[in-house]
Length: 190
Image (tube, rainbow, N blue to C red):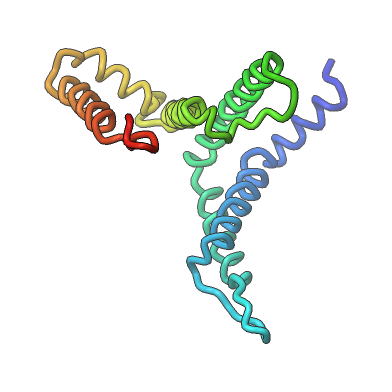
């Protein structure tokens, strides 16, 4: 027997809350925030000469983009599939940082300080890689195959091929170029 809350979730799912309303609100909010922050569509001036974004234009463009996203079933499915995994990743990293903070000295744990620069960059790269993987797994390429499935099958079938070899060589060259050209520490020593 389903509980009252389970019935409410089923009602909201049938109503389209998860497939229409929430993706619309998410895309609208993100687009509006980006347009307001970047002022890419221009700005107005008040009587004192202060600049502010064109709110009406930003909200109209955000509304149209959000409606177009909701109208495309593939995009909504990708959002609904990938975002829970992204949130799980975020919770995992916050839990990991809490564990690190538990063993760290007393006081504020400033992960943004220069002391943790390497860790911070490593976390950013790891999070970006996982988010790309989550979305690649959520977007269907053909039928029930995702982009990640297609890439993985191609990699397994052609692991000794020219494309994979060139990709590995490119990664090695990029790492070598970064290692050679990375900025040194102040005072002339690397």
